[in-house]
Every structure is written in C-alpha cells, then in structure tokens.
Image (tube, rainbow, N blue to C red; front, side):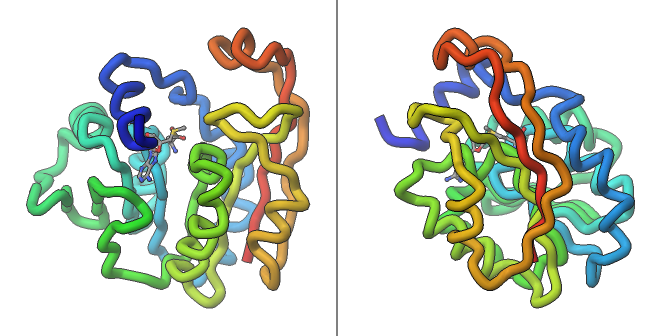
Length: 212
Ligand SMILES: C[S@@+](CC[C@H](N)C(=O)[O-])C[C@H]1O[C@@H](n2cnc3c(N)ncnc32)[C@H](O)[C@@H]1O
C-alpha cells in the first residue's frame, strides 16, 4: 500500500482521529502573540485535511492556501465551512477570494505562489514518513517568505510506529538549521483512542513552536 492509499483509506473509512474543533488550540491560544510579526497575510496549511483552522484563519482576514491529497477531505471542508462562498473548481484547485485549496501530493503540488508569510503545520510533519522529512522540510523552506514563520505543532514519544510519527526537538532543530526557534508550548498530553491502544502510551509530549 502506498502512503497515499493509506490516507485515502483512512478518509473513506471515516478513520480520522486527529480531526476536531479543538485540534488547533495551541495556534488559537498563541496567535495574537505572533500574528503582528508576520510580514504579510499569505498562509499555507500543508496536509490540511478538512481542518477547521482553514476557515478560522480565513476569517481572521488571511489569504489561505491548503494542500491535501485526498479530494473527499477538501470536499467535506468546503461543504462544512465554505458553503457561503462561490468556490470555483478547476484543475484540482478550489478557488475563492483569499482561498485556494489544492488537491495534490504536497511533494509535487504546483504551488505557483511562493513566499508564504506563515506556514501552519499541525499533523503534517508528523504524518510524513520519517525518511521523507528532509524533503518535506526543504519544501517548507522554499515556500516560506524570507521573514516568514513556520508555526509547528509536533509530538514526541518513545516508539517509531506511525503515523503520527514521533519527532524529537533535536531532529526539528536539524531540519530547520539556520532558522530561529521559539518554543511556546511543551507539555505532556493524555492520548486518545485509537492511538492509546496502538501505542500503549497514556501520554505524549506536545510541542508548539515558531521557526523562522
Ligand atoms: C494527520 S492528518 C492532519 C490533517 C490536518 N493538518 C489537521 O490538523 O486536521 C494528515 C493529512 O495529510 C494528508 N496527506 C498525507 N500525505 C500527504 C501528501 N503527501 N500530500 C498532501 N496531503 C497528504 C492526509 O490525507 C491527511 O488528511
């Protein structure tokens, strides 16, 4: 099974335990702390799924681009959160004022606009196979504006099964060498099913940091 097949099956089976309205609590709690530091209003949400954060960021007045490989996830997002907008669909893109949702593999997506002022990563770096992390981080760096910020929520636990795949701070540091890091949150959080049974862990360490 390819990685993409894995995610398509998860979506078609309704097996999306990462999803929820409270999922982006760290971003929402800390956004005012750094929003004024963003050099502009273009935000990229890689591997966005049908996250509530897309609408939330759009409502704050940002120009939001999301990239997601499973089309049904984007369709669900549009029906749930953007049915009030006239969204145009053309060549694997859904477009409306200040909104672009691209249905593609992030690694090969034709994201013609670069220079994003913020890249918000929750459940994306930890979703990609660890062997692809170098490529993934390089892609974020090429898409980030010179003074842009990557807001990253990641998790760390003992074990190498995933997704989600555990990632240490040292590895994050290495992936983004040369960029500043500011850790805003590091805390132990109780796990939920099905992760709890699969991993046997009651807690994982969650980190929310700004990079760039
Ligand atoms: C763990 S979910 C996180 C979704 C979202 N960021 C959130 O917080 O709700 C990972 C998402 O990435 C998508 N995905 C996985 N690999 C991808 C790839 N190479 N390109 C684009 N999307 C991908 C999956 O379909 C899934 O929706």
